[in-house]
Length: 361
Image (cartoon, rainbow, N blue to C red; front, side, top):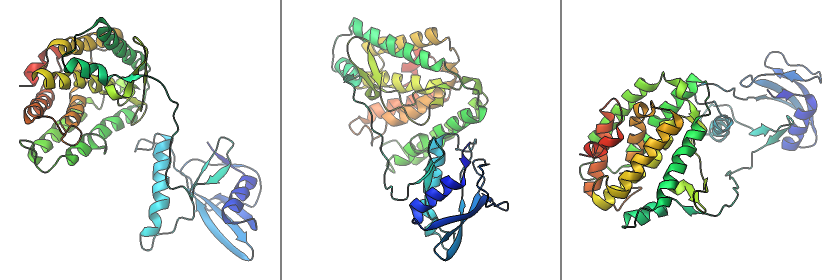
């Protein structure tokens, strides 16, 4: 929990409003004090600051946000909300104005972010070839090789390894299911991104998928014991193979904890997609890899329940690969097979890998 000191506050105020600032009092609203001793306070407890600039005395409120289950679990969540506050308060008539936005560092020093316009992350470079190239080679008629099987096993075992790390947080598990439905990058964001009509894909069809996914959310929301360390966007473009089965992963998304089925479906939907493009059904090399991935994952993880939770995550990934925005060159026949898959998987109590072609209609 951050702690405030008069010295830290005064240094911050001077950096923001000029060297002539003198802090006169500070503290939880209604309990301000001019004393310099540190005062402990909690996230979400507003602190009133009274300070003097030359002859002018003014007051301001320093507000933070505490962690909680309503989308505030992660530091990035709280930063997002506070940055939004600073950006938006001044646009609403009669709303108090935001004077600054800032943060605490590890030494509890306060610093301003008022001049920031965009944020960035600088990542290390790693050599390697995207796993989608392997799948593209097979889709174009390449021969299934021993290394293809070995890489599929390596990926499945990797997921089993990271998913073994669990966290007990029922509210966070519910949140992650909620985000699966309503997050802008997930189901509702995808259905909203579809054109008004794309052949057989109508608003009624997309709404039906959403409603079925929400019913699944209610089925799964009490299975919080499944909350695990996840990648969050484990598809072939986010896997770089170097030599043999040595690989690195990129761009984990939407939080470090979630439902293991999210990662498993994110990868295996791609075996199905490429097989539909090649043969119009799950067949040949891709059927081998699809079944191998599922069998290896269940054996390595011991997680037989993953087939009971996969449906809404397959729906999410199915909406991605069937999307005319993300995959504009697919035929209507392939999109129809993918939507049959989505609807049928959502309609059965447990996903069965051996029934994929049945699900595709």
